Image (cartoon, rainbow, N blue to C red; front, side, top):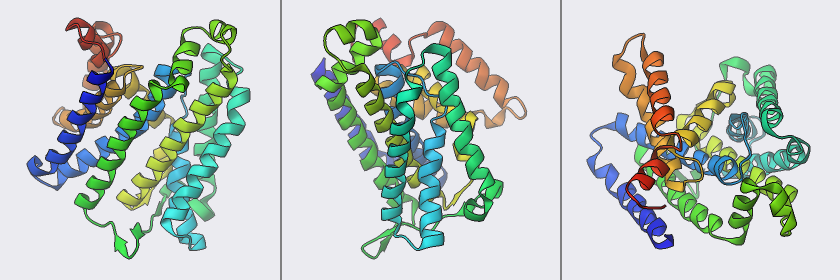
Amino acid sequence: MQKRAYFGLYIVIAILALLPLVLPNSFYMDLAIRMAINAVIVLGLNLLIGFAGQISLGHAGFLGIGAYASAVLPTHFGWHPLLAMGAGAAATGLLAALVARPIFKLKGNYLAMATLGLGIILNIALRNEAQWTGGPDGMPVPAFGLFGFELSSDKHWYWVVAILLSVSVWASLNLIDSPFGRALRALHGSEVASRVVGVDVVRYKVAIFVLSAVFASLMGSITAHYVGFVTPNLADFFHSIELVTMVVIGGMASVYGSLVGAVLLTALPQALATFEGWETVVFGAILMICMIFLPKGLVPTLAAKFGKGE
């Protein structure tokens, strides 16, 4: 099973290496970059939701922190973009660590509402601090440069996100096969049983929440520099729900399900653009059909049907 999982990683790397050779134009290159960015975010979120069993409905708020750190610190304080990105990730990790302990004392609907409230607070803060963030209109983001080299073309950004995605998949596979990953799956199954066998449930919940938040913050910074402009919409509630939907559609507790969910739900709105005025209806219908006939998500359901575990 472990060999099959890592064989999947080699396939992902091969696809990422060959994709630029077959993409016909810059539109598809841009779409591929956005797919890869979303895939990294969803990988981190799936570690929290799928493997640890802890819901987060405000995860886009962490993207907002990373994105605005990369916009505000270089623009207003002259920080180097790489330093600003690191500061945003550190601030996100610290905030996640501070709020995780009280939040994860809650369960079920109460936990979902608490994470939702956190995301809404972050979004409101970004909208209201107009003197720093540009308010609802957003603000431009300086170009990302390192050692005198500036990332300016789509191809440059593609290789950056492709490498980040490959490393993220490799790290996720190693994490879930480690003692840390087994502890996450144990507390997902039963927190009481986990405590009985010596798992520090609170510590593991906090750790995976922080890790998932840092994933999101770093990719928020990458998104901000790639697009060159950031608005509070990046951190709104609907984006959080979109990310959770990617996890569910692809398959919870499935690394490759995260990739499939991110790819499909990033591409689907573009594919449905021909249904003028009916895109949302068709999109919702597709999601309903998937949940009815593939309740465990695409990858786990298909793997079980064809007799192959991930």
